[in-house]
Length: 510
Image (tube, rainbow, N blue to C red; front, side, top):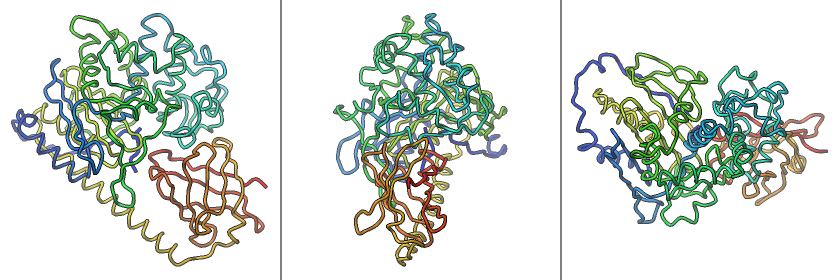
């Protein structure tokens, strides 16, 4: 599964000999881009794509490709809505930076000045964490830590914040970057304390409306009411299927916005023009500057021809150097969608790519091929390299899954009678989970905060079970039960990395 994507994707390194070639790429956008995208959509099996390229304050390309939903003849256009996932974070960080410029808070204020009830397992971090720490992912959590509990569940924002105190942070406070969606939710919850308006109202009134982003929605609950919306898609057993919209309004400031390339072009052009729309200052230039100040080292990654090799994080933006060109970017991913928003501020270049399947890297590869064209670099077919890697990964996953299904088909018996695994289980962070007999007498798991989801368990022999989730985003897995003195005492639950890397140990309640 994609990592997200709420995620940051590595960049392919090419040889210096190739970079030395002199090629005129100026006509790539006008002559070749449509064919490139149409071919790539077929190869990646992407139903719909929307792109926008802005340069020097003008829209050079804005277009929708393909269809909104598989099997329906409903074409994507420049106003079709896609969920943009973690590209929401730049809006949240900008909103808080605006409040600093207005003198209503400081990004260096302690979180507990506004949210005294908010606590972490680390008492020092609870007392010392600043708003800035929340917006640059340095509170000590590992990337995506806690997200199985927080993401697409029925928890409210206040409940998510309370449960953060149950997360056992992997890193010491402020020592290591770890992508933390719940931290951005916490930051967003400071906005109503300061302004008296919920996060979604504040961003709508102070960013969407002034920029003319009239179709953009702050909450996932609203997208189903839009007439011009795309549907999310993913691969299920090798087949591309439309899937339900996720509901992440409990994490809204981290990833709930839905938008179109037309609306996002207004956001990007304002960001590339120091917050101005024409002569009107819509976003304070200082607020934009604050979000682009480096705060954390994410790591190093290979950049095509890059003379400086770094990856930093600002506030809601990743900051990179690419062949002496500064890049401000972010990716976004939620169930059935991945996207990217990229700015080259000194080049006055902005690139927006939206897709309605979470099983592609076109959103990332296309960005680099467009940038290379503008920087007059040789065509390296970054997309082709990403695609080859993706297909190899899919083949490996399919082969591993077939081995597990073949084992299940042999009908191996578990160590204990199936009734011994039945019962109630508890995880301190997540809460309750129940194992019961479902259809065909198979074991079935149901989780307290995922009321519409269940997991089917089939024996692999011993105390191991092959698990398939009713929500395909959560993936497939092997769950091992622990047994002591002939009694089941617990089970380890692991969902797809797209949602969370860490496993959950549930203890059986006697």
